[in-house]
Length: 194
Image (cartoon, rainbow, N blue to C red; front, side, top):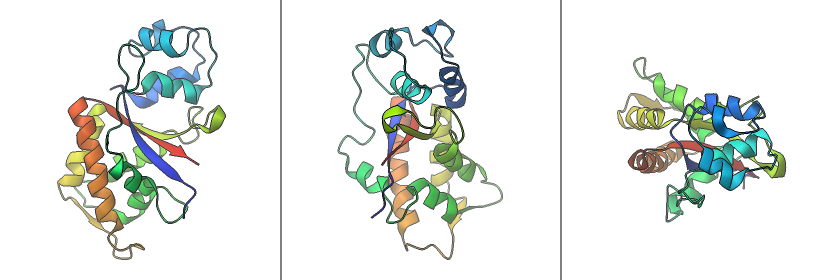
C-alpha cells in the first residue's frame, strides 16, 4: 500500500497562491493579509512563530468565529478515505492528471487538477515543521470550474489506465468533495499525510 495519503480540506475563499506568498513573507501581524484574518490570527498565531506552511494552514482552514474547525467536506469520512490513497506511490490527483485526457475545448480540467496537486511545489508553504505538506489549493471559483469541467464530459480516460475504473471512481469522489465545498462557498486544499 502507498505511503502517500491525501485529504481535501475546506478553506477560505481566497487566491491560494497570493495568500501563500503573504504567509511566506514572514508576517508579524494580520493587517496586511490579502483577506481579513484578525480573529483567526488571534486564535491560532498571536505571539507564536509558525513556519509558512503551518501559518497558511491554520489561517486558511474552514473554522467558526471561535477558531473551532468546521466538519470535513465529507462528514462521514467514507469518500475521504477512499479518495485519499492510491495503491502506488503517487497521489490520487497525480493519477488523475496522468490518466484524464482533456478535449481541445476543456483544457481547464487538467489545469485545475494540476493546480490542486502542484500549486505549492517549490513554494515555502509546501512543507512545514511537524510534517505539514500542502500540495495545492483552489479558490471557491476554481472549485466550481473544476466540478463543471469534470461533470461536463469534455475529457476521456487514457486507454492504458493502470487501474481499470480508478479514474471513474476518483472523479466521482472528487466531485462529491467539490459539491460540498461549493455548498459551503469554500475553496479546497490538498494536504498530504505520510
